Length: 270
Image 1 (tube, helix red, strand yellow):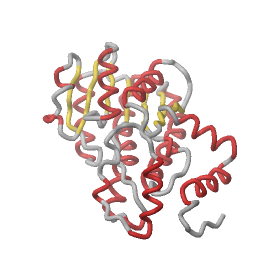
Image 2 (cartoon, rainbow, N blue to C red):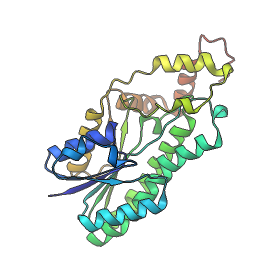
Image 3 (cartoon, rainbow, N blue to C red):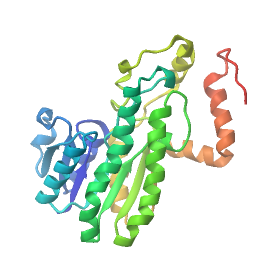
């Protein structure tokens, strides 16, 4: 029986992924900040809950060591994420640091701890959940998207580096998904001069993909035996990526400026 280790498994994509792999006959290590509060996954056979806050380095080290002592781990899914939507100048330094520590450094540090195990075993795979926002630009998500762009570039480098040990690295980029990712926006005090633009953008976001649909793509990436780095997940992800590739980065940037800001009476220089 193969074993998968998942971060951020208390809800959303992480929980859906844990349930899918368990149903497919895998042994699942589902990690989350407060496993004592989890009531659904704890009832499933071959699911082990472990505590993990990916912003705490000491806990990353202890949880990875514990998991590796219990099972031979085949796949690590770096899914834990934290997102805030709003104008950059409205963010406190704490808002900025928490997103960077969770989305980028958390992914890097969890991976760092697992590499020796995979290198010695000459096998293993890392799946890093990013976002379609890692491949294009949107206003009011600069820090979140920035962390996801960072994970994409880092993953590409690492996929080459670890190939010498038969260790794979892949990314899965969801489009807007019905999760609690941006449920922390009360952490930000909105600034009035951005209100109209933010309201327009929020009205255009339609989370029409489910966590289960994203989990299906993660399962595909794990099991398809392809030497492929990037997987797009969700109803709109590939279309958004393809549009940027079709018209180029500069034209895409200008197109998005018009999409979000035209009609608001704002100065919009190209």
